[in-house]
Image 1 (tube, rainbow, N blue to C red):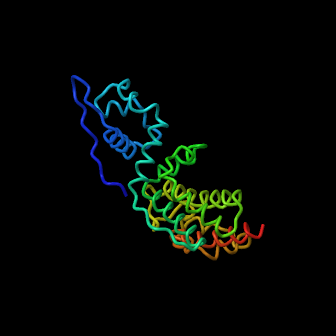
Image 2: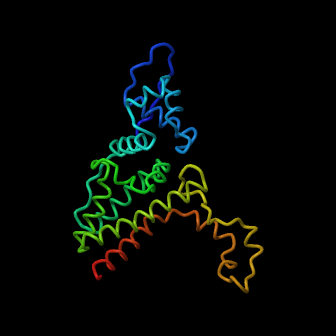
Image 3: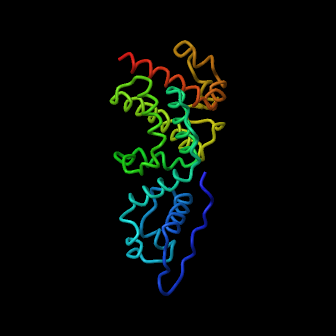
Length: 230
């Protein structure tokens, strides 16, 4: 997780010289406080104590700012050495991607915007490269490696966003939206949904478990077997 930053205080008089680090720190503060959807150039300029026109000398627009934020975040992450064995490399790269996004769940949502992933720096795409290279060395054709990544990406982002939107900050031990409350089970008709009715309150405990890694391995095994066979 990147080091904690303190947003610069606004000043009166002549606009201060604003560094890229100051801009990103202030933007992150606004996102943490109000969410990335409410981040605007005008609000960021006010946070920095400068005019919006001055800020436009550093960044083109909000999308450009978000790209800079994500690139800066990924570049600060520790980069483990990925396994040489292709299948394990896919799992390790996907797990690193999941853990990084779990710390910054808003970035997961931003990265789902069409074309956004392709705007990241090459240095920020090492996890994507790890998945593609692992799938390729396992025997998948280039086009198939993209399908492998896309499926893993959907699974990873979906898991993070569902938990985040239902529980606030990511917490593997906090029940997600699937954790139906106990009273709902009391009203189930066992003759129509016998398995759900039999689970009862156990649904809450089971749905709260962090099964991302187990699911990832099963998914990778199935994808690589299917893609190479195809």
